[in-house]
Image (cartoon, rainbow over all chains, first blue to last red; front, side, top):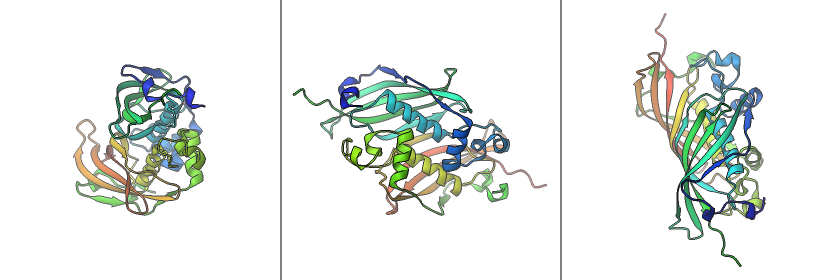
Amino acid sequence: MTSQDCYWFEDMAAGQVLHSARAITLDRDAIISFAREYDPQPAHLGEETAKDSQFGLFCASGWQTGSTTMRLIAETLPIAHGGMGAGIEKLRWLRPVRPGDALRVEIAVLATRPSASRPGSGVVTYRCTTRNQDGEPVQDFTTTVLMPRRPAAA
Amino acid sequence: MTSQDCYWFEDMAAGQVLHSARAITLDRDAIISFAREYDPQPAHLGEETAKDSQFGLFCASGWQTGSTTMRLIAETLPIAHGGMGAGIEKLRWLRPVRPGDALRVEIAVLATRPSASRPGSGVVTYRCTTRNQDGEPVQDFTTTVLMPRRPAAA
């Protein structure tokens, strides 16, 4: 992807909403594989171990939902030279993500402003909602990212 | 691991601090592999592509730092039947995680209270700080998890 296909700070405005072009499905094996490496707790390791979990429900690690969301963000809002995020506010896991769930994201721009400390960049705050195939929100957060300003035309 | 080796709600108290017994090192290949799947932005895909990133620095995806932190939390605070987290407050990526950085976590319990809606559970709020091999914080967040209460002795 060239910088021409990417978003610059000037392309962003409060009220803008972007939707991922595709869904990513978390199948059973992918959920267990992620859990073995990053979140080996009973609820995420398979149907059998999940019976011994607090809610008795086999579901994906919230960090897998978050990481998969990041993948969809990178495709939906490809930032020239890549975005730099300093953090996340109020990350919420709203519903369990079950095997076979197909996730999509919606990015709603809340605010934009030039960076005071970095003249070549702007600061963009957006809310990202991840939904399953039934349109139900499974995760929600707000984040602020640094985006480069488009270079002046030659 | 049996439930006897795990933490129950009654084992937790404000002021308690737990440290991971080991570090997890994020090497170059692991950073690129995670980025290809979850965060394919220039800064995370290798030294060459990182030169074209906003800060020009090759570093791990924040979501890899977060997921690796979850692994260390699961080992450091293994919760009976597994913890259930509803979300994360103020996740901050404080410093870049570079290839070869060895991450450890510190879990500082901020508050505990019985759950009003779930009599068999308690609510524990803790702050988790992830540090590199030089002791510098690379990530910080606060979270609240549901933990089961220890069953009455038979």
